[in-house]
Image 1 (cartoon, rainbow, N blue to C red):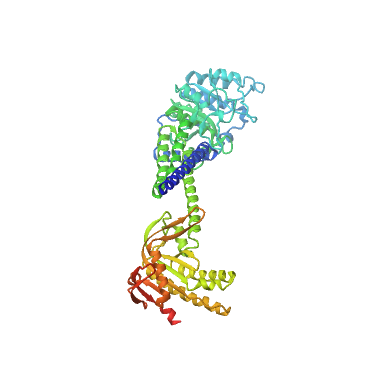
Image 2: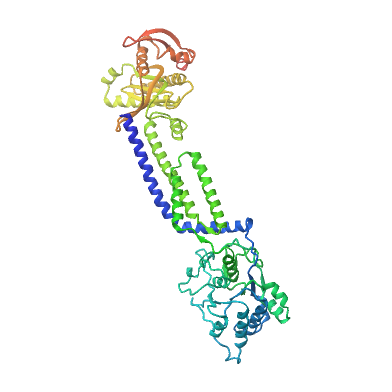
Length: 599
């Protein structure tokens, strides 16, 4: 029967753990692609890029050159920006002589002709585009207007730039307002054709995935050449200077203004704005083009792989040993982050936020489960031992300082058995109310005395009380604790008698028997009614020793085995072998506690 109960308990425990794991898997699946995991993915990714740029940078041999239209440029030119045709024409003519590998125009070119202001005003700009097209490919950026629609570009300018010259310059940010991905479809549903950087890469013969994560590890911090400086070189005929700066390199023309066309990046890229990640969009385009020309845009791992790793992380649910859980909790994120960072350095992105959350969730859910089990165990311990042991012992039991095998164990203990002399006759001459009140007062005082000396009040039988010393709390010398408890019980009986005397009630007299030995002790009874008690010959011998107190004239009678453990100290008197009820013979000692005599 005991084996069947144990097997049933084990099966129930396994079923609960299995059900908990199913719940853990559901939580894991929900967390993997949640907003929380996405936010964590972004924070981790940004720090990975910063780490890789600092410690494992990827240099670029033929870097992108930015020509920046900055505040100084606007102060130099007096006419409105819409009428900068001559300046753009001069820039394009300069580029035709410098012969870059490709030129991307990340500025707003006119939407219509301005010939109505000045005859043939568009001609210089058209001729500049034709001159550059003869030497290098051109990509014209198409911007969005205030309504989110793509702005048109004056048709002759598109024709002069060549087929498929128009491309979008839309930069899309994620939910945290940081731009990491080259994908205009993230923020506009009508993105047409290629992106500016994609079209430039295609012109250079790089046909790779045009949607993906920009590789912010590639290249050093970017610098720019002011637009006005290029025009000065052209005006001064300094073709050698221009060839040194632009020949064979991709060139991006864009705005470098403090409050316009700005985007947030995960790393610092603009050398002219140290520690600033809120930079001009042309910087983002330059980095995206770097990525496409070097190793290509970084592609994210398939969602199925991420989900599989998250479910694998959920196996932390089964981590039970405290040291293993601690090691797992430390090593798991370190290994995962290290692998993900290495993966990113190889131009592949493994988002680990959901995986980490899944592992921590599994660990946390298992911890909560164990806390619930611990709370149930503590409640069970309180229910079992609350009335048996002292509050201090109960706290130690709950804290784990005292181990109790509720299923039963064999243990050496000292049993104390106390009884009120002639209580049967007394109860017949007293009212039920008086009997109950007396017993309640008596047992309350006796229990306090037993608990004060770390004993367990395990059983009440009529007017008798049985206590155990040495279980569940192990004691260095349970015999000494039992004798001290017996002395305290007798002193408390005096206090009870004093109160009885005030009420005109006859005093009581008790006898106490003590014996030591091995017993079977545990949580015994039915599911509806049970108690923590001891079973064995030692218990019956303690009861028989208590019977001897009536004939030997000592309030406490103990076996010689008890007396020897305390070296017959404290006034113990050897009484030799005594025949007890049932003809059992045992060497005993009588004791009249010293404190009892002193009082």
